[in-house]
Image (cartoon, rainbow, N blue to C red; front, side, top):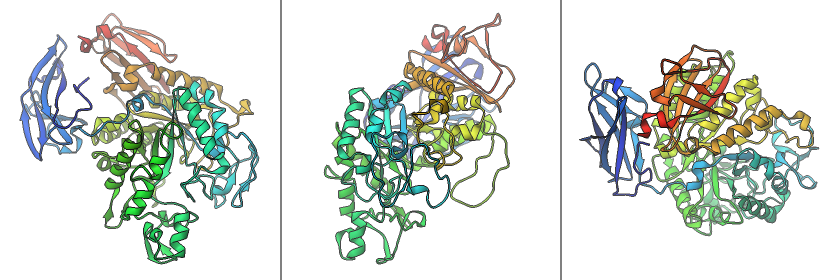
Length: 598
């Protein structure tokens, strides 16, 4: 809506637009750009207008790979205000929240409309019974999981890849078109983040042929497959690490960060079973992710994966005074583009990823900071908040004003392209189950509704769609109860299908921009807009005061989607939104009546 070309090349000219309500009092604007480290104010002109608003435009040139800009407006009491990604400011602001255009190669086109379904292979579905390995605690499919304690990584339920292949109809019925698997390489744990090899698919999952069968079945349905790779570390049973331990002069010894060979080495969070890679070593890079013979390239393609999610990507290549993270991400992306130009590269990141997303690396990151935590903080029941040291910040209950502020801050700090391809989630294999956290099914529906309607790539964690429970990540990894449909929340399943099928059928929800309309403590309202469609979304965590929106903004008729009743304007040309909660409502606006379509 506001950029003539969202994927420009270096040196190309781009027209950017500013939409100005006449009621704002703004009459003029300049475009402030920063090129080659120097700022400039550019003239603007009117592109189109009507009685309610006018659109200004200005041209900028992509002289640098990343060009940031913001608008200088008149109209405030002092006739001086800046407009950037976080909104209006009557004071000077830093460049940190400027709008940004990037000339780097864009993510694959298919990713814009993707809906991911995350599967933890050991717990989703099994096709045959296999003997448990020597490291495992064998369990029957219906047994309870060990939610806490040293035995949690060793419970073995025996889910496999052919079991997933047999359940693709269920996945597709949810509106998901991409299956994301947690690691599938051999390891000595059920989570397999401690890989012992990258040369084959774990035989416990059915081996290489089972991966090929799953990939072929997905591609035959027009669906895709995303793999999970840890580039930060491997397991202490990995063949490279065993060689490194045995011979300090081996090539492989340089793959790791020994401080006193062979007993002392850098590892992930102090876990000796997870030795950290040394990315300064060129042979490690060549074997793992650089070039056509690397692990990353080998497993991409028609019979394998359509992209990778990189585990603990925020830590990869970083240790003390060494920071090779940018090099790792750009090399990964280059290797993947050469192996498969349509491959998607996503990264795990649990906090502020803005510095890692303004370069030619990750297409997007797991959006814990800009989506997940704000949604949790808004919807969670009020409770005492722990205040103690540890790796994770607590989750307080916050107001709608606060959480929308967080969402805007994190989105403003990165290019729109990164926000559009952020992996949004309300739960994963590393978190509590959303049904357990929120309790009230209506609040869970609000969470799922925001997942389906906010910008980004939504990810469904297998089992959430049937209301599975779990007080933490380990407890949430319960086997999917295929043979016990009485344990399913069928209302949750129907709602999930309706929400994500609605997303898939809506151009605005898949590709549109975001415009906030009303933000209160207990409710907020926003528009998703594309050239051909406008969708209004209203979320409430409890009953709230009435929100009235003029018909000049959304039209006189709102057609309900995903079970939402239709709405009509009153005699005063206002649309009054429902004020009950918890609730999530979605409408398609009467775009013929909205001014932006003129």
